[in-house]
Image (cartoon, rainbow, N blue to C red; front, top):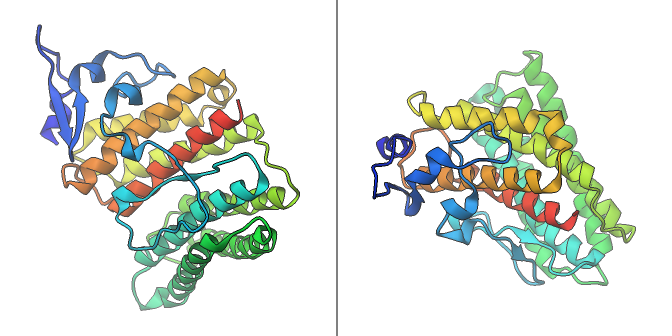
Length: 315
């Protein structure tokens, strides 16, 4: 991580410092001097100037027959979006993307519920992971004539998982359960399950439009909470990255920020994607000290890609 810290030092005249984080090349001079969307954190550059390897910053149009399994390498996981503007294509993309996200939530809960005393809720999380893995596999068979019925099964499953998350959140918050899952993480993931179900219900009514205010509010909360999670999961020695994450958290939680023009919000979304992409690369390569797994780093990065996609569709 010394390279990351060096990148914020003054750049010598006539030359630029380069930061390499897991194969990702970053121009050091950009880190110190580029204005950002919120003007809160001048250390986070726009993604276009940060990321040379853009494979992790692009979305992937969902196709029938496409599926990703639980063992797909994190750096290779696609971020599925609708290929065309119709209910079937939106349903296909959301079932592929969010079923994977729900499966991963359940896997994180399993990891964070060790010991015999947590065997009951851990087994429930294991079952949800299995059910969503199966749902993800079956989503490859979606067709225009069967997606409505399939959506109903996903809606039911997402609501069940959302109820489980809310129950676990209350147990953790009141001290009835002592796991390693923050109450806010249960709340955060329950909100995502609820939205997954709500979007599928819209598609079944042949509604695909995005309400821009809802998109900005939902994803700003999500990006802000992600940034807070990252700040608390980094090694205490990673002071620069902790500071960056904390500043991002504050900017995305600012309700006034959520009401600003589309260009500013999109720039901020690109900034958080840049931060997560560098983080994922660095964590994957062992260059960033943390207790963040590569799967979790990939997970939050893919959600930032979806944020940007939905912003563009709601403009």
